[in-house]
Image 1 (cartoon, rainbow, N blue to C red):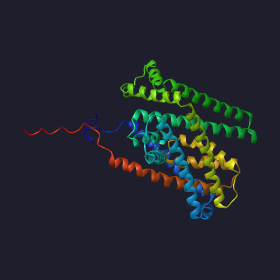
Image 2: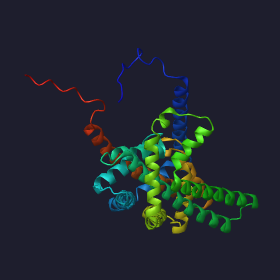
Image 3: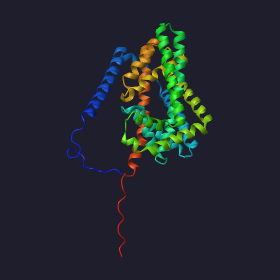
Image 4: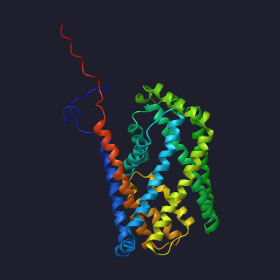
Length: 355
């Protein structure tokens, strides 16, 4: 059980310098992202961007919101399939809410994907934490595999269609090959017990993490759930892979229709697919909402694919607004969870029965 202590100068004193430095770095990165975001808008021309956005009708905005809703519904269906395969029956609304809540955390905070996936687990309190963690790990692994497949397809197209130096072509192929081998290794280890293997490796390196060692049994239980899925549900694995591969095209459809609604020159659907896949690397940096990094990545791709910059920045801003709206929606299940969560700790002692 957790022990409660006094909070303040008496109990903790000053926070360690390492945490201060980490907080400072995150703030600097965040402000740098905001500055870059503003710079790109000013450089492109605010009037031209606003003029392009003004062409959108309410019906077209609703269509874009509907496409994003479809995206979240498919992702919730994928997670539900994993939960059902593990023997859990959870109302679909709870699964969808947990999905969007995780997105809100990853979008609005520097926690990124790791923080978002953690929130997913804590939102489904009716499922055992170890089993829920196992479904999230498998879900994320399949998503990464499918994402890597789409990136590989895009890289092949870039190499064949654009006059890149031979050295860059070799580097791109090598990077894809390394990522493929890494993910295949992770999948194989998951079938045998990835987390247990990680603990054993740390022990061999004489690195002990008491927090993990004290929870070894629970970690091995999570490994067992993951290995059980790979052994018993190979068809579901392939179905999830196909679903996540298709979602990249759904994401591309949202970008394509946004360009069309703006009324300017519309890039081909495959160019929109390239923007989605090659632009996914921005999500690895710990910047809230990837502000600035997201824009710089997409602007670079617009220049490479010869897309009009004012329309491109308008698309970025529209997608920003849509993303913020869905992040706001994701805060709702978080607030409900917080208001309805029981207080952790030992139950109060029973009152003696009067004789």
